[in-house]
Length: 256
Image 1: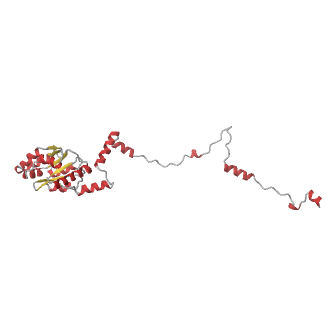
Image 2 (image 1 turned 60 degrees about the vertical axis):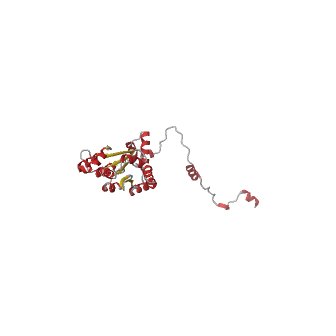
Image 3 (image 1 turned 30 degrees about the vertical axis):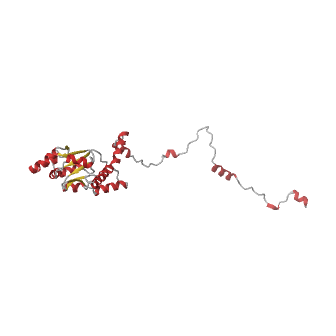
């Protein structure tokens, strides 16, 4: 692998590691179209995938992808033999198989919780998974395996996390582990969140009544406002004697 391509692969892998919590061993979900392209281009998937990702990998497929190759006949017999060597992951279509493209997209769900890499040459799968954030895509072109650059949905998801609009998968995992350590379940959090609203009620009329005085109980001291009112009431003007200022005293008669 060329140095320039190797740098690009490292950059893409680190993007999924730090933003979507991808860890080794990397799980690669493969379908029959990818195996057929590898067979034509003489690519050894088991040998080249660990070197390409520079880490441990787990190659896997689904029962729907295997059954699809069985129904297609002898033309894809070599791809079927390659695909049978990989681990088979359980899918929800065990009793009623569906096309491999539909099965792979159902394994990703809405947010790719199991952190799958997808290896396919199917156009319907590639267009569908580009709408789901955090799904790395492998395809074969010009006799080489290529890891596609992150989709626009993945870039928008990371941007929303950076702006604080969403919580990253790594943060969700740390929150879950902290809740498990403290023994807090989701139901407990819901119960705590549901608080009953208290109804506004009128005061008790009995509590508003004045306390009655008991026999032999000393009267409480008057408040300043009550004392001032009583003093004002007790004050009155002195009456002047009749005649006013014309009445003379004995001292005045002697002087005359």
